[in-house]
Image 1 (tube, one colour):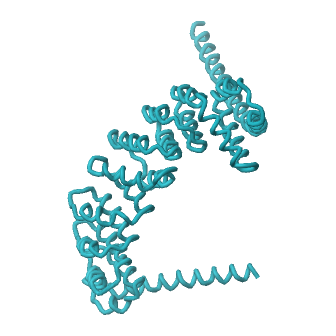
Image 2 (cartoon, rainbow, N blue to C red):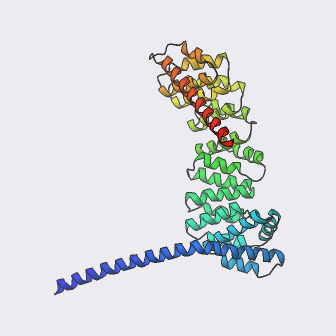
Image 3 (cartoon, rainbow, N blue to C red):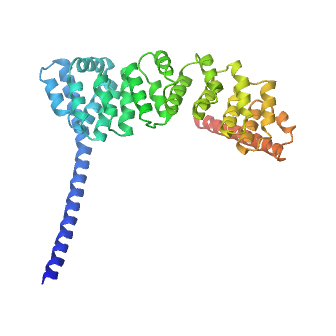
Length: 368
């Protein structure tokens, strides 16, 4: 009898668990569908509300914003409405409304609310600020603590959209201190979207290169590579310093690949000849495409004898790009494959040129 009762209890508990899961899934699906149709509906309402406020300002508008925008679904609709005003009507109206928001305490008070929300909601609030900048740096910088990577990156985006140089520096310092990894190109692209003086930002951030983690320094170098040719002399001692992280030196090689600087040539040639880290040699071979001449050709021809296939391929690719195919053909590689490598790279180059020509012809035929 007791065993039968236990079995019945287990069955009842199992069925209750199944019912709970079904109810949870049903509610989740309902909320998802509800959000799907509510956001466009609420967006239209917010567009009307924004225009009403621009036409006849209401003292109750701030309270309405503060009450409604505490829900992330409503904040999404509000953001869509702001985009609609900027896109469909007049950027002047959008700027006027954003000016009204900046003068109020609404967004700052909302930041205090969202700071204690789950990471996903914090991340969206930071993204909202990045799309519709309001200067609340001191309120949003704390978001980077106890949050996920999406929130932290969105905080950086927001600070860049505000043009807050000190805020950007503080967040990068936090990333460096806590060894938080974010891909350097993602950081560099955000920095490149800085709303104010990019050159001043680059100068300020580069001032920390001896203090910051290598990945953050690489992000700053990548940002500067997108931006400016004014760091040719400043970068050269860093490239020469063999004690610095490899990624940092590779980033500077890519800088000199974009911006020609004659004093960098001997250093690049030295890296090309390295055998303890072939990554340096590969990057140097690619960078030397910017430095045509006898010294470059001689160094690349010598690199065709490297034990690394990738170094030989990089040297052959640069020789072909520089029109020095015959110089490479005239060398016997250590493993007897030099001529084959040159022919392989030349065939690749010709195939790409032919493919580009065919695509161009197809475009012209389609246009006709």
